[in-house]
Image (cartoon, rainbow, N blue to C red):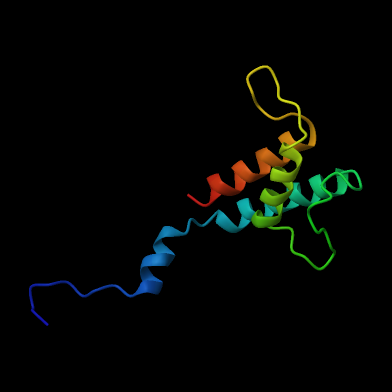
Length: 100
């Protein structure tokens, strides 16, 4: 190793620096909002999505439900989704924004 070069950081050190200290709290807030949205979702609203108690309520499931609801959802004045599709669209946006 050349003495003038700084030591190379390990992968774990580089990843820990990117993770903000408030990330777990923000993630739990989004997951609580997702649980509330799933509780308010009418039975059979997204028949193409397999909703089971054993499946985690994470980003992938929220996005899948949003896509299923988007097919039949109405849009607002500026083209945004309304109703349950709008709620799930906001959750998807929150998940995507918190990962930046």
